[in-house]
Length: 261
Image (cartoon, rainbow, N blue to C red; front, side):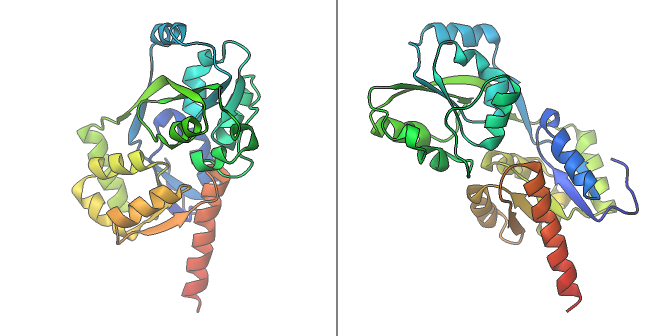
């Protein structure tokens, strides 16, 4: 990214490269400087594998998508007249963009806990619920739905892996960070945080304590405070670009006000 004199703060953006565009644009629109450093790669599962898996599963009453990635790579799960669930507003928006309306999603919040509070998921005894997700992930959603009497199965639509950064990319990152210290690091998941700590060059790992970690997830924030106790943390209201940027701008204002005291 081009450095400009009017840029107010520098942000290390760890989202997968193909998903970073909207957030990068929002940061730059707020006069922020973006340092792209993807720590995770998304690998879609082969369409034939997905079709073969679906052929072994009975029709579902409800299909729940746990992320925009699940929507992008797992829409084949919507064959039939199942009701559609989404983990949060970003996933519901991805469904809408793909031509499908989410029937069940939390109006506030974007976690399994928030979705499980929805009225339509309280009385599910005897229903089959399909969860479309990546490999691994939390089991709370499935476990709770099973405890309410539902039969739950999974469709794994993609795989997450640590990004394979080249030596040249790591050298460039350290050079950029030394030239212009990073003010904020955006991390969206615990897995992304783990990958970040594994990938960062030693000097950058030490410099991390001078930056603030920004996340929309209270679970990530808690893990970051335990893993990097010397790093400031900021909790954004949601994963939406506008809320992540708002958290950084509010922090910038607070730092300015404090410097004028």
